[in-house]
Length: 570
Image 1 (spheres, rainbow, N blue to C red):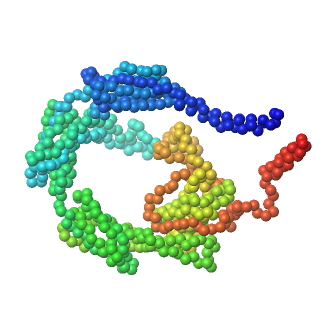
Image 2 (cartoon, rainbow, N blue to C red):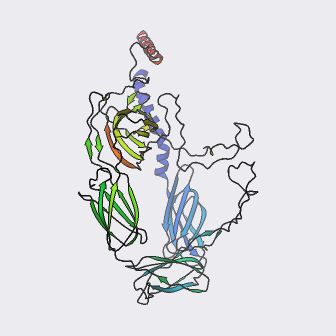
Image 3 (cartoon, helix red, strand yellow):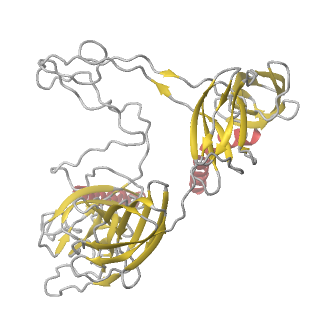
């Protein structure tokens, strides 16, 4: 009878075990009662403040919640919060004023009061007119007054040279050989967050602003004129006169026209991109060449930067030599001709300006890069993994995705490379390698390890490299440290040449974003099941004649023992 109910008991225990961890949290979340928390926000003069933001947060140690509201015309607000302890904060953007207080919720709460300090009156005035270069008023100009912030330092006193026997490391602080300066002095007054509304000028071009004392900037713009900004410093109870002069933008009647050709063959380059940037007026334009390599673009006259680039993305299949190809793979697209970028600066005049651009071609990629993304534990290829390669010499990226066998194929140039591999459910990896000149094919396998990156807080990170001072014994570190690594950066052990297969360097589950020119494309390698090359790495399956691993022996023996015990009890 007991044995009959044993399987049912196992099922019940498993069900309870599976759901038990979620029951307390779900009960707390669903049964937590909300209470009303009410109050008002007033100025120090007792006037209600409408539009203030109110936010609250409470926690009882196991469950937390927050709520927020905006005060109404009476300065009142209402929140819904569960029981717990926390705080309520108030912020009024127009005055840049805030207040807050702790709160304990065990039922409905009312009568909370917050007081915000009223900003002082605006007594500084700036007025003027918007004029053109001839002094005539500009009608319809938009003028804005904003605070101008800066921080000034007193000029540092010259530093005396350090003695010849002193080794400097870390940061200096006072003493001989150290430049000294006074503490930074901010010249921006308290900001109350309410810049005056923009003013649109009338026929007289006049404007007036009333604001607080301190450094400000006037910015004016109008159709057909370049934007102009003037700085002005205002004082309390004073009026400052400041006009703003706008410069008329000339017509965009400078035409740059010409041809883009291959510097080696003289043949026209179709689809080349021609960029123009007029530095004097901040105006840009661009165009592309036609089938004859010709282009024409309009811009403003003056100092102009010209940039021309051409990188063909259309590919032509490359044929594999069956007699020499040791690894079979499908054809990979070979990109069209790519060229080094052309840059030139010239002064353009109104009318036609001629320019012939000769682009130097880059050497064509001619090395077939093949390989596997490998799971070092199972010794199998990883399908649907992504591979990015970075040519450190040419500054170019290329990418491919592995096929069902875990293999990939790319058409690349010879040079120094960094390869990154990543796949869902795996820790990414990174390796560097070199493709020598003259190679037609190169194999590069890269390993990824099953797992998921866990982002831990950096409360025990190393503070930086160890520094040494003159006269100390070798290996004795000082306390000087270098700055910590950038936020978000993770440390990873460097791969050692003697480390076993599967050791990784920098790991990342996120795709690497290409930042250079992708001069080549790739695909699955089309190879068979993964097997190591002749360099001595392990093969996918044990070689014939090898002994059965010890764990397998233990498993077999244990299984036979359990079977014998069961037959004996029968």
